[in-house]
Image 1 (cartoon, rainbow, N blue to C red):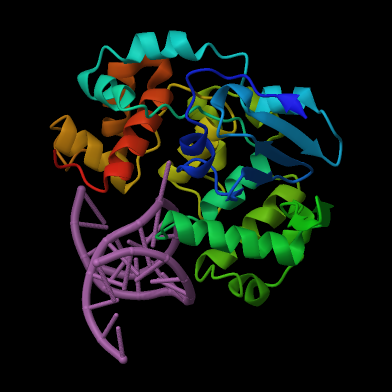
Image 2: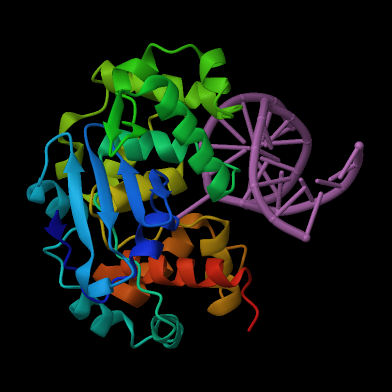
Length: 282
DNA sequence: TCTCAGGGGCGAT
DNA sequence: ATCGCCCCTGAG
């Protein structure tokens, strides 16, 4: 086991919040299932002594470092965005999620599954999909499943995908998996500037402004963007007084103008904060 | 058992 | 720019 070291981070909000749907919360540990990696985090009761392990390759510290973005100075980010009164309040209440850098295909497919669903429901769907289509691995006598490879999803029928509770999203998931397998997405997507990359993503059937922004923030590291879902828009209108009739782009630009290059971090903190409260009322 | 909304996007007006 | 609809599930 390896020592886990990311100070000032609320791990529960980081992996069980709204940016990743592939973590299982067990009584004594968290287990994350990715395309080619399982990550286990334990000893959480002593926050200073939390440890991690990776499978099938053990002690894969480069994976951990990249996934949890350990090169990012969280303290610096907090210093910059906590000038805002709402962010400051959220942070004072010990809500400090960290942004992850997740696998591209997995992120895209996961968010295609998210439309008009609650978070618990999204998690259930993705777990069922992994259990059925992903490879099995045994850890400490328990079975886990890797997130399915994109080719497998592309070769799964829409009806089969619907068995995972995907409903009308099944077609989007299958079509986009095929799209990726056929190499139709520009391979340099991770090097394009924000607006170009977003344009490319929106060519995928089922991907609009919001899902594109989720992929851009949670997988491609465009930290200056806050994806605007129903909660995000509520934060802007109810907390900051924006006109609800503003377009997605207008709201998005307003937020980025306010918080600058760390808007995504600010947005995530606010999102988890209001989501945890269940409402925006004081 | 029933209702309602849930981290959207598409296609028709 | 607005609106009905897509399908299913968790929460009350």
